[in-house]
Length: 49
Image (cartoon, rainbow, N blue to C red; front, side):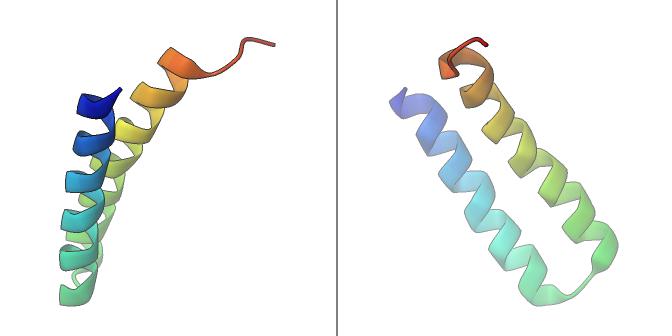
């Protein structure tokens, strides 16, 4: 799980940098990349309903 957490952390840090720039299109792209790392962890470790 460390690899997944590191990937999320890297993308979240990039999102913070992009957001500080104020370019809404760049923010949307990076937000999507960050969300993909969230999803990868949730898909693997989430308790199935």
